[in-house]
Amino acid sequence: MSTGTSRLSVPALPDRWRTLLLLLPVLLLDIGAFLVPMGYLLRLSFTAQTSQGAFVEGSWSTDGYQYVVSSDLVHQIFTFTVAFGVGVTLLAVAIGVVYAYAAWQAERAGRIALLSVAVLSLFTTLVIKLFAVVLVFAPQGVLNDLLTGVGLLSEPVLLVDNLVGAVFGQLYIVTPYAILAVYAVLSTLDRHQVEAARDLGAGRWDAFREVILPHIRPGIAVATVVSFTWSIGAYAAPLLLGSGGEQTTGILISELLLTQFDWPAAAALAVITVTLVFSVLMAILWRFDESGGILNA
Image 1 (cartoon, rainbow, N blue to C red):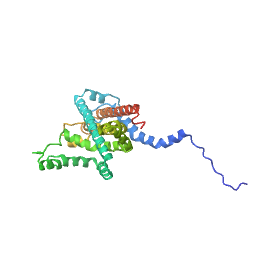
Image 2 (image 1 turned 90 degrees about the vertical axis):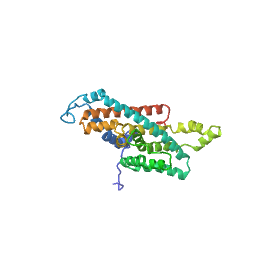
Image 3 (image 1 turned 30 degrees about the horizontal axis):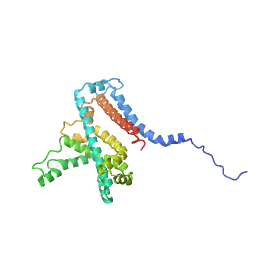
């Protein structure tokens, strides 16, 4: 009789199943948080419109898409939304590149200060951010008081309740993400490469264009995706800082849902907006992957 304790041998899982088990929580999160809501939204967009409620349950119809296709108001708002999103994205990425480069070039204390400003803004809630923009850019705000006080302006300039205010507000929301995305990649660059380019006769701009810019392309891609995704769905900034004429699809979807109770049209417009964002995302990833810029970084 053996006195030793016997051990149960557990068969080792193949690598494929081990990887699947590790990815299972992420897959479940994606299904619950994205696929299921998007599936319901897609189904809702194909229900029939009705004046008796939000939609006709169990029905199948293209009423919502017909409204989106035939309405001139939707066309105008959608066109403005795309132009607004593209414009804010270009500005945010440009500011993000310049700001990240300045932080990368700065000494340790300056770098910490610059990055702290970008990071701390992310800890502020969206509404407080936008009301801070109002306090700064209003006719009686900090900026106008400063400019009129030093004599650069004879009278205050209207920087809110218009397109400028909407753009400033949206930039305040998305620019910190662009800065951090670019800096995260830029911080991995070996400074000796820039110094070598300068030693070989490249000027500051040539070194930036030939060495730094190719290196930070993955960061620019991420900054572009994040800025465009936030801006194409802009709601709070145009609503609180615009004049009322800067309507975006987000504002229109809210009105269709809460005021007109036209859920099929709101769902159809939301599906089209999400499809546009997803298409832009895939195009950016494809473009950068072909040149070895993001997925191969």
